[in-house]
Image (cartoon, rainbow, N blue to C red; front, side, top):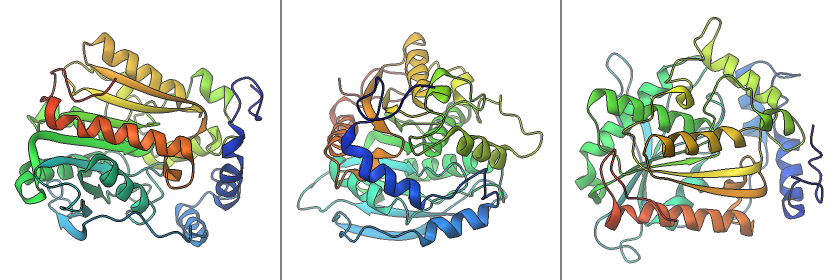
Length: 336
């Protein structure tokens, strides 16, 4: 196992240590002393919240949108930019939060969704998909596609420009974003200009060099990930299914991609591999790598300069869909 200490080769940036230590202390010991999802959520909900005010946006609305056939409606939270700061048509981002398919919700990712709306000048539709283990694979994928389809059909209502629909997600949300695009390709839409994936989890095999190198000591651990996959797939679940492990899917014809990858993250190699696979399939892809950062660092955009820079670049990639955006399978919608 590589030494992850600051100053070591492939180690953490010393600037992140106070944040990483605080997050680790508040996070449940998943797969160890904590094995029940409800208990894990209780511990996470009791963790102290930052005292700072959330980033300001123009308007916020909670509502529901139609769910998949035979399933309940999907709660969403819609963020609109201040019209004084961003008049006219805007990108529309369907955002899927992380949390290992089990944890987190609209509230835990409220600050991130607001920051993304501001950075991209975009309408953001944050999706409260069904979580495991109460709702195992593929319930969350179906909810993600349902929300994406609703957004694609309501761009006028959201002030969105046609051709500038984006699907985005962090961690498990990145998995759901990629899987929703596979469903969109299979089911004839909606057309998406860009997939923006932030340190996504993309393969249930959990067998890469970064899984071993950063198995512990950098916030997200290999033990956490094993527990998450167990909750999501359930006994006998098919981790090899392309909708569970998009890295194993045929990626031809998918929209251009923008991937944010943290250097000290068990999931680093999956993000890099997805970038390579897309490129091999002729899909334009930009890889924004951040050596020394840990899984989850983008949530610290309000206090960590490296995270702020990553958010600005991510927002720029999304914003570029307004002038360069193309529908699925065509070049455009990314920054270099």
